[in-house]
Amino acid sequence: MGFFIQDLHRQIEQLHTEAHQTSKMIIYRGQGLSNDDFEKIKKSEGGLLSFNNFLSTSIDQDVSYSFAESVGYNSQLIGILFQIEIDPLISTVSFAFLDNTSQYSDSEKEILFPMHTVFRIGKIKKIKDRLWQVNPTLTSDNDQQLKQLTNHIRKENQKKNGWYRMTGLMITMNKFNKALEIFNLIREKISAANNDKQFVIYPAIYHDMAVAYQGIGDYPSAL
Image (cartoon, rainbow, N blue to C red; front, side):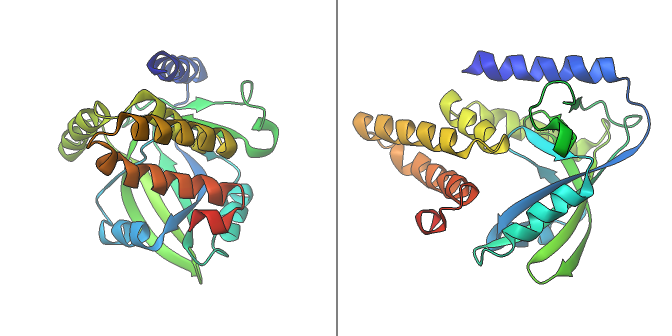
């Protein structure tokens, strides 16, 4: 499993090198966040934001806006439109244009970032009820706060099981049913092992399972 994730990282780096992107660009991501998670972002305006898994974005604002707007109809979630500014001249973070590799590329014009890419949170504004816009930017390679966060993420990531990281990737790729299959397998293995780790891992598993159930429209199971 770790090999698969490492290989995907290498593919992103290779595609990034081949693209020769040097000009600034704006990309978008529509996403749903719990009220608690969104409040944390609001309180961290000007601070750093890290996405725990591979980050799928689009250059098509309308597609991302529509998704964020639809998520907001769920009373348990806040719809977020991330409007992300990229300046390749100040950041060497790799990202890949998936025009030739993704089955969704014709409609979504997808751009994929590696796991744990870090952004600085810019302006946050309300679009309408239960729909907000957040403007992150890629951080400079010389950002000291970024270096500290990167070290922390590296240490935390070493604690995670490869299967658990894989579920995050499946959610990012909108393969929610596959994510739920892996979640159930992890839960069975933890229960069979019957050790204290289950009390640490279970909350994280159930949180991401809720996200997956929301992704397939099964809101009762997500509660």
